[in-house]
Image 1 (cartoon, one colour):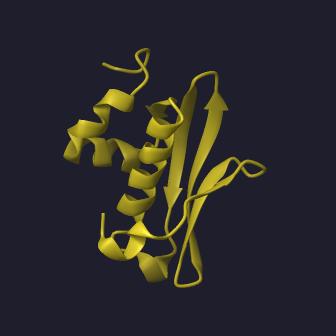
Image 2 (cartoon, rainbow, N blue to C red; image 1 turned 120 degrees about the vertical axis):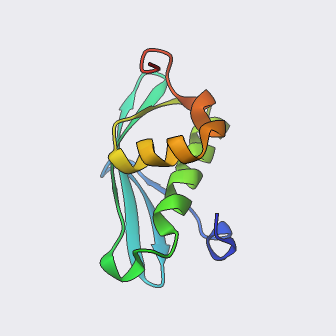
Image 3 (spheres, rainbow, N blue to C red; image 1 turned 30 degrees about the horizontal axis):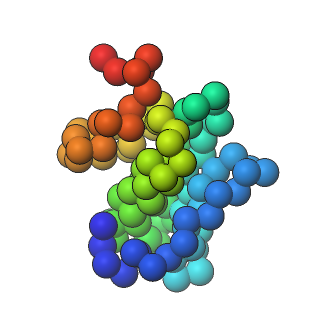
Length: 101
């Protein structure tokens, strides 16, 4: 993760079913569906002004850390999350058993 994002908080907006991270006044999100013991990660969105700066990778990694700390598995349905997992297989331990191929 880019060092400039480490100190930024990950906000769990349970009302909107999404994680949020604010960078330079712009909000990036990962939409999710809470399931018993798992988070289905549905969609990652980064404002155009922040694209290409590592923000998407940072919010995904923060979301994975949240899942790990809360003993929750992930179901990666978002295309960006799937790409991130291919590049960072160390996180595959978080994938829900029923989803592993």
